[in-house]
Length: 124
Image (cartoon, rainbow, N blue to C red; front, side, top):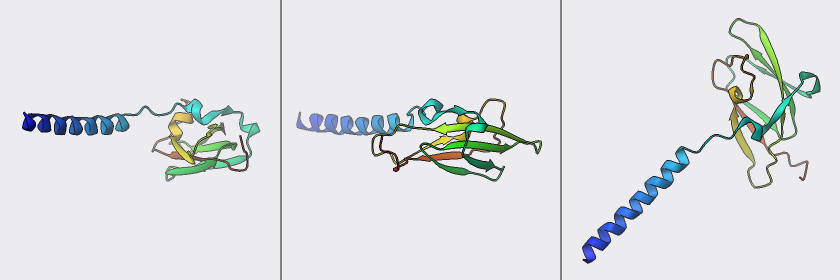
């Protein structure tokens, strides 16, 4: 009886660890709206050029960014984004794919991560 209980307890512990690891790896990505909202490129105060070699971009909460994205045909397309995560916790930075923020008619050939950092200048 003791042996069966010990085996059951060990199996339960392993199953619990597997479930925790599984749920963390399948966490749903945050929606684009968590990171802010689109703005007109005329309302931006920062310009970020995204070339095919770019892999990451760094911005802060409160930034209004004009993304200039080089297209596969060599032309450039613009879109604006106001970053505002309303992060009131200890979440200093969060990453989002630029593809998730860009309008559907803008091609982003390779993955580019946008790292959004908390802006400590503003105390929400």
